[in-house]
Length: 110
Image (cartoon, rainbow, N blue to C red; front, side, top):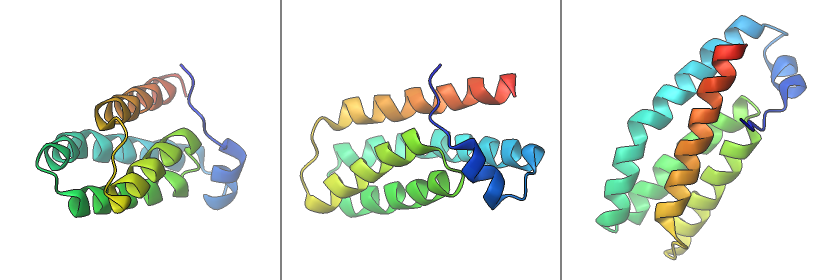
């Protein structure tokens, strides 16, 4: 498991409330889970504007919690979809799913 979280930054933002942080991480994981199939469909149907909006929202949610790895993946997906050039989107979604699974494991042990 290699979750890239800037825990100190998250705690500063959340007033050192670890339990609240875990709750918000659980919400983020749920959002990512529920959006993966929609993102996959947007890629297959070449709806890059939809994909860009979804990636932007999830990038913001993950950045607010200082989940650096996931933020970078959504940032890349947003940038590529805005440019209209997706470089291996299947792998990128797999990387997002993998990072999301890592966060689930992080939640279990914290």
